[in-house]
Length: 274
Image (cartoon, rainbow, N blue to C red; front, top):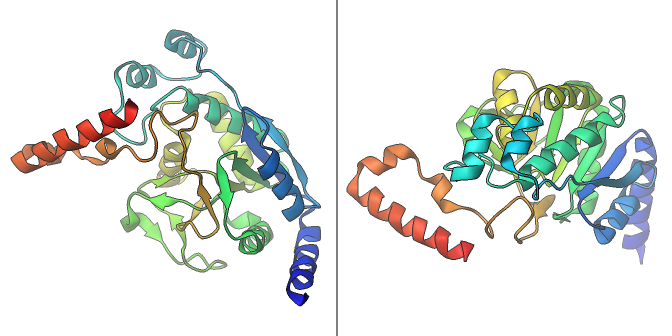
């Protein structure tokens, strides 16, 4: 009996401090369960839905002419991608521009942005991390609460106010953005970039690139302990789960054994598309 009351007291003490926080769920439909949970976890925040932008019915040519994507992105959409950072489908375009609209709502407040496929695994820990981050909003632009890293060699683990598995991205790339906190400065910087630059890669890759250039200060919780993506074929993905073919570096094709492995991987990926 004491444990539930203790949890309620914890959320009351923490959440009333975050009345200045915006919380949005990006979805093409009605994310009822996730939206209600967000309201319970952050009762003092402004919680709502940011409608996704569905451009899946638009032609690639019209997306280029409208300035939404680059010619390079158009080529990938027409002929297929080789890397995870490339746009694998039109769903990734709609997601990026839905993020832009959510960022532009009010750049003076921090924004916690969920994708509708987010699964919250440890609610109390998530709220604590968001509270800590909001208290240090001047020290970062973007904080990804649950992701994977492509390259761990280019990270700085000495984030002064956070414990591992938090890292500061210094290069390389991260995957997954089902739960992301933007500081007011981060909202302003990324919103301005998305409003003035046609999209040429997936948004997580874009944030990784901006971090590498020093344009954005990106923190990442490299774990699925707080949140994870649900296993499904989303509007962004064309296949279920990871595309192993995108993990094969072109240099690997120089050896016969790697070439044989590539054929096997390609066959597996093709089977998933059926």
